[in-house]
Length: 299
Image (cartoon, rainbow, N blue to C red):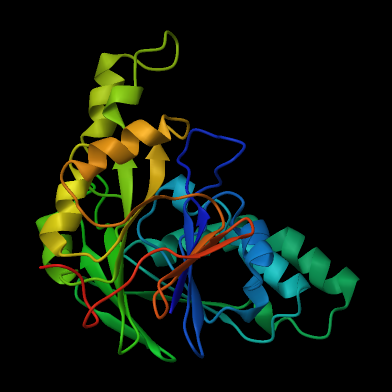
């Protein structure tokens, strides 16, 4: 199983960090988890364009996790997708997808009529709303939804992904969450969001102290995320969804390492983790950067 961080940013736009998106690739199946801004280009760069994916999983209905949904559907059709989309996510997702498709219905009809492509099946969408604890088999992969704490956004999910040998945890957006820690125990890799509270200062016309406190209240602080990984017993921790998207990487690593002794990765767009070999790849770098013993992390 490979996990590729396609987008590691947040709603604050940054040239080096796209919107929230992760690619999960198994032996005979691949899925996208969230579809933030730039996800479709990142999929092509990763070598698995949308036309080849088996499913999309959505953690929650926030724009920075969903804004490229229609672009994914249409670009995959242009790539020759020959099967309908299957989209899994929380309650409310079906209404959102239906509304999105309705907004673009006239444009889509025009394209179909004028472009005369061989098939329109790739534009069909099936939405499957799932609940906490629900398991979705996909080839050699199994995705399990875990309800996380992103109030007032509810429901919101993290996902456990297993392939029979390895286990990855994708946090989605959440406060430090006991349910995720319990469900993810012994993970080979934890991919977790992070809010860097020391980097967020008031900025006139943009945010004040109340704004910062409100945003921090439904994310996991950089002073907390290492403890989450330690309590979970994760063998390695990859950080993503950085708020703010520009920060002191060395200071973040030092802070997280105070409470988590394992390998810590400051995620970057395009960074790929191979859970079978412990290899990490990014921008020409190839290294055996983390390892496993007995198929699980530290207890």
